[in-house]
Image (cartoon, rainbow, N blue to C red; front, side):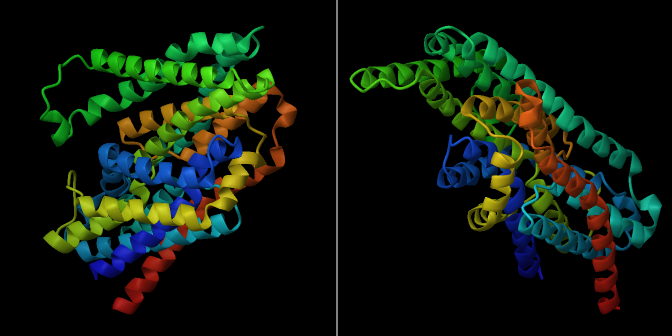
Length: 414
């Protein structure tokens, strides 16, 4: 049974890669900062790393926080069948949305499917409506928060660099600060949790996390400074290039870094949507009991989820990448960098809290926030309306599918 369920989880991860991972890389590909092949490599490495090192909290929330597992203690097989139904419902929702080129939320799909099967199996009391309300609130707050942060980042970048009389020289002065702030945002949110993992916790590191983060930021800043200095020296003998083109080319390197942060953030949050049901099924199959509060997720499940995500992005991710990268508004590396940095910040904060939020919400909110700051007429509100409708339809569709598939499996088993 486990091999078949593992293939089903791979199918969900495949569709998650084709839709949600394409969300996370869409701005980078749309602004020409990275190619699709580079996006695949970044996603393959960073999505898996984020899931393994920073994604356990979200996976556990999805298994034990959406429903009351204590109600299934005497009937663990019902919970197992429900998780199979969740995998099928989530995979079908994502596949339909990807075929239409719509960036939806796998978090919507997984939460809706879990609530749907649990309500049918044990009644409305089986669903933790307080957790559903909290998660739903984060789905509303996420695009607003991410859009606000992106607009703030872009306004600072525009004021201090883009609108400066000599933007290239100004960019060189800001390289250490951009590098240190980019790494600092990542480190401050992630490192305290990352440092508690067994391999890292065994290292003789000093207790002052801040000193480590400052040192990391300084190293990266010096690396970027040397990179830019070498690049400037090699370009002296070349024909002059327009300042705007040169500036965006330099900023595209920072967008490569922000793309890595978004991939890590997405892996830390949304990969749990594919592997959490499988983890619950494996736990029930191994122990014969329902996971109640805390449980260990085998490492091979993360490998499976990572492989499925990479395969889905490679084979079927172009449609959604086009919608995010160019369908909402045209992007340059400067705006793409700010959008991705804001998205990564928002999603990593949610992962730190164990909340399953939507990376697509955060990224779309960031792009719209920058678009409204630049020129609201540049925002394609028609595409935005389609995306919003897809978001709203995902939850009831997944809930209905989860309940229907659960009922069908139960019918054939009895």
